[in-house]
Structure formats: C-alpha cells, structure tokens
Image 1: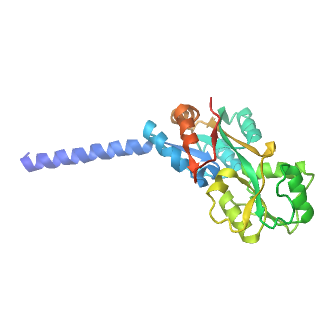
Image 2 (image 1 turned 30 degrees about the horizontal axis):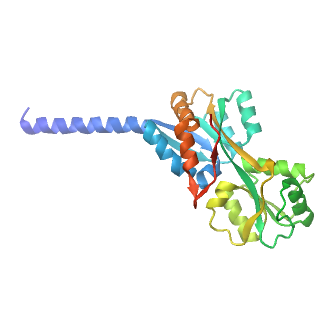
Length: 268
C-alpha cells in the first residue's frame, strides 16, 4: 500500500471513529413528558443545558397537559414525567405505571381577567367564591379543556363553587396555557393560569391578575420514573436524582422571569 493509500485509510478510520462517537453521544437521551407550563415559562431552557452538561444525557421534552403526559408514561412513550396533579400522580404510581414520585417545586395558580372585572372578583382571596361569581355573571371564561393539571384544578374549583360550567359564556379550548391566555386576552375572558406561564406571557392586552393567594391555588410539581420495559431507567434515574438533588434544586431557584422567581424548589 502506498503512502497516499495509507493516509486515505487513516482519514477514513478517523471519520468512522468520530461518527461512531457522535452516534453514541446522540443515543444518550431520555424522553421527558411534562407540562406546557414548564416549557412555555422558559424553565427548561434554563435548567436542561445544566443537566446535559453535568450528565452528557440530552433531554427531549414532550410538553403536553398532565393528563396526556401520564398517558404517555402508561404506554412507555416517555422515560420520566414532570407533572402537576398530585391525585393523578399518586394514582399513576399506585397502578404500577411509575415509581419513586418526588416533590420537585411549586408555584401557584392565579385567576386573570379583564380590568373591568364584570364578575367583581378583584381583591378576593376565595377562589371558589370567585368562580361562583363568574358563573353567576355568565362572564366569559376561557378553559384549557385539555385534561392538563391546570384544567383539573379548574374543574375542582367549579365543583367547590357548586357550579357545572356550561353555556355560551364558557369556552373549552382544548389548548395549552399560552394559547388559552391568548384567547382570553382576545375575548376579554377570565381564565386560570399558572404563575410561571403568566409571568412570561407578553400578549396580556387588558388582562390582569384579579384573584390570588387562596391556599387551594397552591401548585406542586412532581417527578416520576416511568415503570415500563421500554423506559431508559438508568438514564432517567440520573435525571430524577439531579432534578431533586442540590444542583437541580439550585437551578430551579435561580430561574427568573423579569427578575421574578416563579418556581420554588421542594426537593429534599
């Protein structure tokens, strides 16, 4: 073999090695099913690069409502979950679809609506009473209607108010938090929003926070490992431990929107 042929063989071998290393690196990823609030608020854009730097594992996020995220976990289409419906999370684990549910962080829900406030809920700290007033006034209300954690919390508030929401005033959108806020802004409607998405929402128009501070608006998030043969258990465990450990909790605490902290770590 002449010198040129040897050089060509070496170059080919190096290219092969590099492509192999790249393929192996790209194969180190997990699929995380999570809520639209963690995605749309910008939290993931802040914390995921830190985890990927520490672990070498990429996180591919599927941002959907909590109900849909839990279904993805049941089918084995995700390796881990980060969701916010404690009753649904506990049921998911109890039925054998997940393991080791852990507290991660919390924020809260707020009721936003037009500054004119036709239902007269401004200043109240009783969320159920506020929802009752909205229904009594038949003031426009934009519901996510997507079985998300936010939607499930909204339904519990209607139930606490003794209201079955229906009629032209009540719009079920089947949409995420951002599109729901856009619709509420466009039609001058009330809606329930998580504070993180609200803080990052720019198209507010006439919408303002009208009701906040009720303990029932507390909004905790949990991390769950998916118990399915297809799940990447080892890689997902590294994410789970990082997120609920000192580094992940510090990353969550350092996230700000316009200087405001919108997620508060709860990990042990």
